[in-house]
Image 1: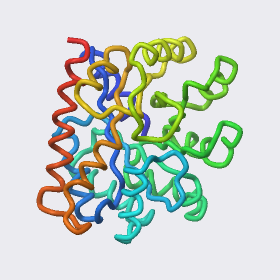
Image 2: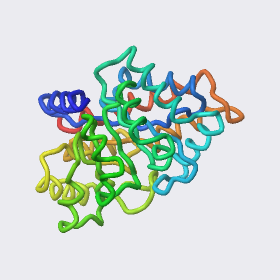
Image 3: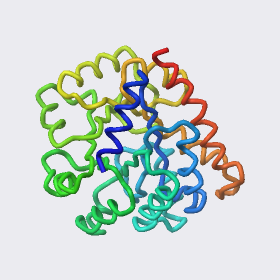
Length: 274
């Protein structure tokens, strides 16, 4: 499974450009529309796709992603349907890495071993589990790694040099640098500060460093992508879903609203080092 992720970052390094990592919520605003959104992301410019696993009690998500998760749950999304979303995507695309992002509770309820096996069969490449620190690696991280899946860790401005070696342990695929203290969707931090933090992280690992939280425009992506190995955009994309709805329901414009924004931000990503 890790081969897909490693191959993608190696190819982008050869092109001398950062990865564009897109986040969307599984099942938002309904399973069928979410499938259209995910299926169209690579053609719009996504290099890696993060898919949110809806959870009723998120701790790191800002208002836009919380609302997306709530819409998905109300539309009947569950873990089985989230894995089916990946299975359906893999029938059309076997190259783009897929990362499931969320919280441990739904995985625990599903059953760790069964979830890992079902994720492999669906075509998942890795996980970002927000509420599992390194001290809890035996819960899910190590079983996933043993099966060949990536476990992608979060690092933040508050992760000091003493803590970093533990954060980097059992980490693969890439490191997700949270560019601020706070929740998703906040204002972008100073790009100069972010560049310094990216360089600090690179002293501790050879893995790609992808920066997320607060990146909303092609301009933001261009500035961050000059130093980072990847640019992560999430809240802006789920907000595009929200803004396209009528009476809370998907319209014919919903998938294209996301894809058009991805295509626009992708231009900034690709111009970051030109």
